[in-house]
Amino acid sequence: MNILLIANCRLGDSLVMLPALRALRQRFSDARIVLASEQAGQGYVAAQDVLRGRGLIDDFVPMESHRWGLLRAWKRLLFCHRMHRERWDVGIVMMPPVPPLTQRLVHRFSLYLKWCGVPKIIAPDKVAWSEKLVFEQLLELLAPLGIQPAGFELPLPQKTVDLPSFPVGKRLLAVAPGANMPLKIWPVEQFAAVLTGLPEDVHPVYFGGENERVICEKLAQLVPGTLFVGHPMAEVETAMRQCVCYLGNDTGVMHLAAACGIKCVVLFSGHSKSRCWEPFGTRHAIFRAEGLPCAGCLAYECPLGTRECMAHHDVSTVTAAVRERL
Image (tube, rainbow, N blue to C red; front, side, top):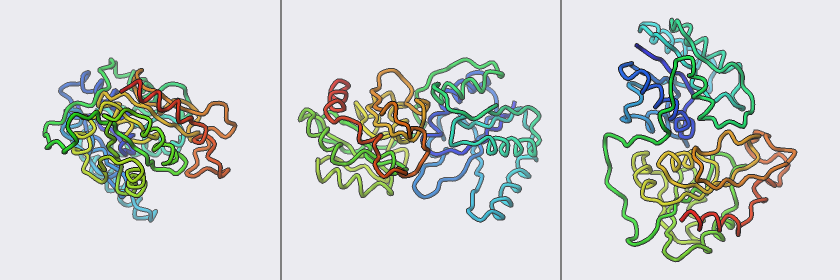
């Protein structure tokens, strides 16, 4: 059996697919599973950087995305032509069926699969807010294939990398003070206040991409720790697996921590209207301002200029949650 998945995948998007991918591989152990997604761009991690060598995906096909509409359309036509030359049994639009995804995009990706000659296409019926986690919604999407849940954890990679050098005898706390949107960032001073309230044997490790270097360095100046910024994905995962807890914003690194089996303390903004993007598992502490009329704004930056949804989080309560999970 040949299965073609199509998705827009960055770090968090790739990781929320894990339960569905594990279940798909368990159900069709001998199938050839191919994932078509955008290539890595500045400031984000591509699906192949996360999932290659895990035994879940057999091949990755890039769908190049360009700002110039005509060139993007031409590249997508070439992609469909290339995929049409292969024989596919099932095609799946593996997209979280929640905003800001639109039904129009789901329809477009379904058309791509149709143009690729896929006879059986599975795609979200509707795009709407839901209290179910995205992981659960993607598993439900694959229900027609008769799959059964097969776990969430990120399988260990086939290739290993050298362990980073961290202080001996310290408990490592993964800290991610950045995010892909200003709206989702808790003030650096608040992070510093939490870190200074932790036991002396706790050593913070600051995670982030190159686009988050400034904010990580600023926090490291306030509370000394190990900067782990701009490293390849394999090294980031190796370092993350050494940590005992995660403290940070709603980011792809948060999902990586959860996928590595780490307990998370997460500061959520009001960007989303429901709990759908929370990390998988029950051992996490989730902080979210409830009852705000602006919840679900989907904004890049706070349109009110107040960021009330992030200012709402209390330092002492967050500190207590981290201490409990340490």
